[in-house]
Amino acid sequence: MTLSTRQRFWNRFSRWVEKPLIAAVRSQPLLRRVAALHARLFYHRPPDLRVEPDRLTQGGHTVPGWWCHRGRSRLPAVLLFLHGGAYTVGGPASHAHWAGALADASGMRAFLPEYRLAPEHPFPAALDDAETVYRALLATLPAGHRIVLAGDSAGGGLVFALMARLQAAGLPDPLAVVALSPWLDLTLSGDSVQRHRASEMMLPLSWLRHAARLYAARAPGGCGHPLVSPLFHTYQRPLPPTLMLCGAEELLSDDSVRMAQRLRTGGTRVSLLLQPGVGHIWPVHAGLTPEADAANDRVAAFLRAELARAHTPDLERPS
Image 1 (cartoon, rainbow, N blue to C red):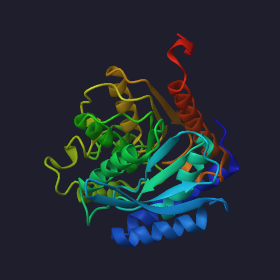
Image 2: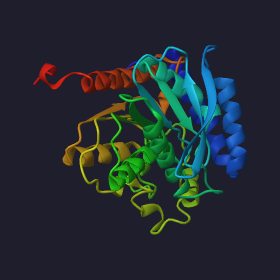
Image 3: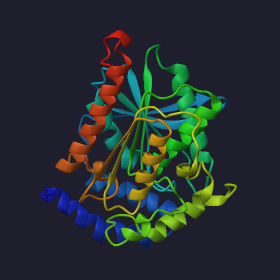
Image 4: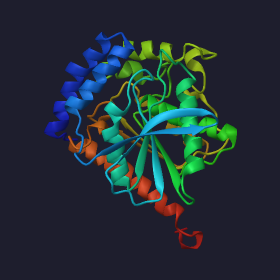
């Protein structure tokens, strides 16, 4: 596969700048500030992107967040986007542009929760916040509107942990699920953790281990808890249609491969793309590389198709 010049640049930038920087900064609060500055300097933020603060409340618990869109939402759906950052960093500074890009391409608005982070707030704080936001959206969205659930990296893991919570509580499923380079096994037991250690462009293994310990500090069973590492959770029923994208040479690629296999065995309709030659969460470079734009377009097409399928009367659907 031939990579664009821009993608080759960002691959080198990730390997020689981002990866060493992440490994060097041991303080997660400091790394949050570094990540926010990095995003402002290097990510593409369209001038018409609207990032509007809000606070969603359900059951006496309030979670702050941001509506991200470009004023062109036209479909009766909301993209609930759970950001990545190893459960210790990330937020609107690093992800609002991406959530807005996906929402705009999909024809809907996105809500980006500012969920609580470790080490100050270890498991289950992030998951509790995600569930609060989901319940609040269910309670407040206009009739006929649907929720689609997406997340990257740790946010992708949070997506699947939230699906376990929703099933246990008997809550309605989202319309569809999207996971981008998801971190699903905090025990780091996948073969790709060692097989791709040299080819991994962004994530230092030492940082993943450190972040996993911080997040799972209070979890019974530690990193192996099935809501910390949802790869090990057994779902009660098939999940909604699911799209997973991951770099083929990522440290965490086996997380996606194993989860796709487990979900298919359980009856879920899953599409898995293993993209060669790109790094962890490469679609975050929306507007900067053709490879990122193609990945985001694929997500948007998937979401539009699922929304159209949901609004097509059964008699008109192809058999």
